[in-house]
Amino acid sequence: MSHIQDLEKQLRKASDAYYNDENVMLSDKDFDNLRDELQKLDPDNAFLKEVGAFSTTALSKVKHVIPMGSLDKINTEKEFNTWLTTLSKTVTNEFDRDILIEDKLDGVSLEIVFYKGKFVQAITRGDGQIGDDVTHTIKNAKGFPRKIDTDNEYVYVRCEAVLLLDVWKKHFSDTTANPRNAVAGLVRRTSAVDSEHITCIAFDVEWSDDEVLAEYKKIEWLREQDFNVVETEVVFGRELSNLPQMFDQMLKRRDTLNWEVDGTVLKINNLSQQRKLGERDGRPKWAKAWKFPASGGHTTLIGVEWSVGTQGTITPVAKVKPVSVGGTTIQNITLHNADEIERLGIYIGDTIEVIRSGDVIPAIVRVVTPGKKRVKIEITECPSCGTSVERDGPRVICPNNNCKGSASKRIKKWISKRNIMFLGDSALNTLECTGVVNSIASLYIMTQEKMVAAGLGGRMSEKILEEIKKSQNVELSDFLGSLSIDMLGRREAANLVTAGFDSLDKWENMTVDDLLKLDGFKETKATRICEGVQYKWNEIQKLSMCLNITNPKKKEKKMSSSLESVTFCFTGKMEHPRKELEGLVESNGGRVTSVNKNLTYLVIADVNSTSSKAVKARKLGTTLISEDDFLDMIG
Ligand SMILES: [Zn+2]
Image 1 (cartoon, rainbow, N blue to C red):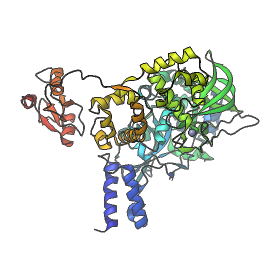
Image 2: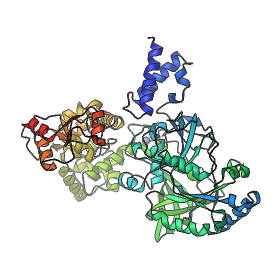
Image 3: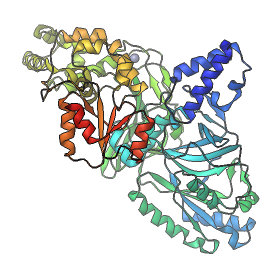
Image 4: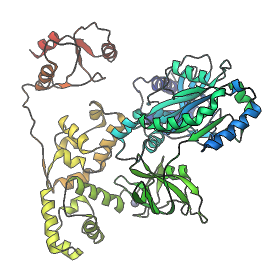
């Protein structure tokens, strides 16, 4: 087989696995490298022209085959009535004026493309004509089937990518102001980290099938095909005067939902009437978005302050004229990232509306009146070190590895995680400005003389030094988890210590493959952690010499290690209590886990069971054994 044929074969195999959600055979980077090579050697190769040949990492621009238009908005009952009057001029029969109302979800609008019934691509709405290819994140999302039953060559499903409120609260509420911001970041990230938390909820479908007569039939079809779909209801043409009341009810209902709804969408149900009404400037005349009112305050945007974080991400904070919203005076509002600024379309000088998102966190919702002198909000250089900034999806980053601002944030994080008292922002700032402190390790070689010379009081310096001395005793996991290594917090570090990485030597030699063998580690996380540890190794070593790093004693002494590196999962009814069986596994050096590809034995009441767990385990190559088999095994 020629090299070109071989390349094509590998790519096809990997691409099939990718779309069918089987075990990924090539990393995204390897896939792209192979594809680039094929592109170079054989630019006319058939594979490159197929839909599956797109890049898996970069957010490449894609043109929508059918444009994703946006909707005109209605804000008041009066505007709604005006629309009804306009409608009735074209759609004269009341029976043809049935309206489908559906929840307007507050997330990221997407198009999911199916080719010959198979999921092949996901594209953001973008400007309606051209969007970003986000297949690499959406392929991991929940809420839609990877295969559909259709005779159409292409099917385009429109949906909203959202984070369910409980998911947001659990995983992202610390780092993002609201679910919308969080999901926007996840969808458009160049890496697919955390993309399994995204949920897609469908609201429309486009195809060449012309047998569908009504909007609600599309929703029914989507539901039959196993898509998550939005809540909908048909209001008869003769009952449209009730709609404003229904709108009020929906407004009240929204607090009970597990996703954020920012209004309702109204569509003429009858598709032939839709065609008759047509569109204007890409906006359909047969549909409107009725937005829920936001109860906020109006104020002026007077500036934006950018600051660099522990990982070099630069985030903007809006400065506004003090305004009272819900009894709290607001002056600073985080804008999260550059995309958020673009989405809001805000300029310095604008009058803006400010709300408290989830009744707590201040957020800008819209421009009320553009300012007379509008100043564009932009950033070209890192506010700390002056290096030219770079963009990574929605994030702005300082690419300077020695950025002082970023280093300062890491020192602050260490101080807070290690609970070092008295060394507050202003004292630290004094020490940093005079060069006494420039890294975490420098805290541990500081002397009282140097601190006093820098401008701190003698007694204060003494107290700080006592605190720093106390912080020298640190457990291995707390040490590694406080170093601002991407994706490595203290809990994750503790997991790894428990999993056997219980000395610095082991951390130094840790590989991505080692981590992939553990539960809960996927390629990206494993790579980030290993790279982070390697990258910081000099600092880790230097710092470890200033500290007294301890390892907590194992709670239970192992009785034997006969089951070392063997994993078990128990399911169904057992003769012995579950806890007792699991205890036996652990005291013999084995591990209890769920059904996954690293599971060695599934202990099950009936080894011939066809339960979903049993089927999955067999598929993954796990051996199914009975409780007696298990007890024999440990002797
Ligand atoms: Zn910088």
